[in-house]
Length: 115
Ligand code: AMP
View 1 (cartoon, rainbow, N blue to C red):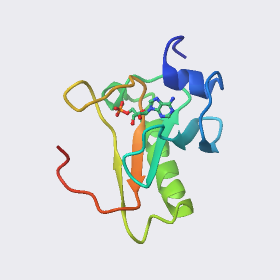
View 2: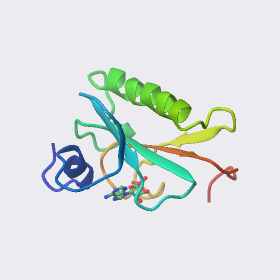
View 3: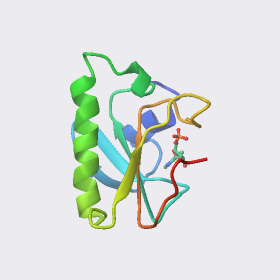
């Protein structure tokens, strides 16, 4: 846990979020500034700065985040139309919250590559 990390505060329920799934390892909640009709963030409860910090001790957890993203995509009925699962790393990619998270985006067609 990181004291000043906004996503750690969501994990600790210190700030509100629209949680769509949670268990002992993972919390998933709706993005406060959605970039698509469905925009959900999937995060580990454990503070990991980004996917660049995933190592042997956290590799299973990182894979579990992807598994949960697939489960939520089904719940949100995104599988037929398709969806995007993306994680930003560092400034050039636009990472604004330094706590590992996957964006689950769907509900509209999206251009590739992103800008
Ligand atoms: P990134 O830019 O990849 O680090 O993504 C961070 C995401 O977190 C952005 O899409 C923000 O809109 C979202 N975000 C920031 N603060 C909150 C919050 N309190 N609740 C939900 N989403 C948030």
